[in-house]
Amino acid sequence: IGIGTDAVRAAVTIRNTGQTPAYDVTVSTAANADVTTFSPTPVGPDSSRFVLGPDGLGRRDISLHSIIGTPSALAAITNGNSALYVWGEILYRDAFGKRRHTRFRHMIRGVANWPSDNKMTVCPKGNDAD
Image (cartoon, rainbow, N blue to C red; front, side, top):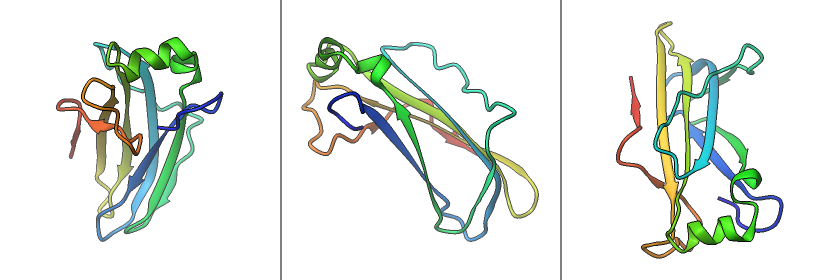
């Protein structure tokens, strides 16, 4: 997560840890503070599709300015009164043509010390893959 001025953003990095390429990869993401319902993040028809080779990396930046762009909103998260969540879904086709997915959910809040590297932690729920 990038902390600072109007450029407040989260960067989601994806990696293909397999030995074969992932085809027709689409990534959808969402972010909000203090959510209790993590609705699916739809992939629109205009979403770009790409191939992610073995050990390949991809990145998706998410603007957070509308969520935590004010000093009071950011303070609520850093002092632990609120939490920021980023979640999403990666859809792809494996080398054998089978459709696969990976869902992820991360969060950050300041109750137990704000991480010095500004990295979010994995939530106990909302992370799965097939």
